[in-house]
Amino acid sequence: MTAARVKSRAELRRERRRRAHGCWDHLLIAPLWPKHGVNLGTLLRTCDAVGACMVVPRRPWIPDALAHGNTLRKPQCVHWIQGRPEHWLERQRTNSAIVGVELTDESIRLADLPTAQRRTVIVLGHETTGIPPEGLELLDVAVEIPMIGTGNSLNVAVAGSLVLYKIAGLC
Ligand SMILES: C[S@@+](CC[C@H](N)C(=O)[O-])C[C@H]1O[C@@H](n2cnc3c(N)ncnc32)[C@H](O)[C@@H]1O
Image (cartoon, rainbow, N blue to C red; front, side):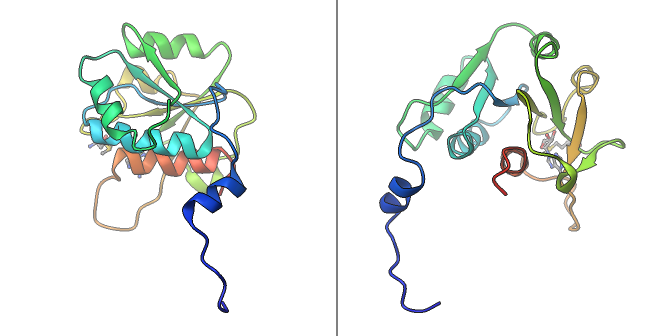
């Protein structure tokens, strides 16, 4: 690379995306059994970057966690669900593909996950226990991110962000 001028983040942002997206309701990332607020904030930034919405259960601590994590200081597209997460997920099956992000015997590899062609809900698991059995039953497909290290799993916000980028067709 020669002496190219390094552009400021503000310049790059103006050139690449001129306005904040609204709620397109096309890609929805659903950490339905969340434990750590910091992961929700991280996911919210990825949602903004790829044009996705987030779906979270109504729990007293979540609004604060999202406000804290929303470093973009702009309104984000967040859907709140009442009641049991599995019931909400069941209802989505009428008009959406349901993709679970989880290590299972039947999971496809991230590289084989196609770009979403229809409204898609991407389900993430609990930080300690993963997607519960009643959630796994409602998936159309599960996707896993291959790992070659010694850890058992990735951080849930990292896993969700990788899948969001792939399914949005941005990488
Ligand atoms: C920390 S992991 C849960 C690990 C839990 N001990 C288990 O065995 O299910 C939290 C969530 O991150 C996602 N995740 C983490 N690593 C992943 C991977 N390599 N492939 C797919 N999903 C992953 C899944 O949604 C998982 O439910």
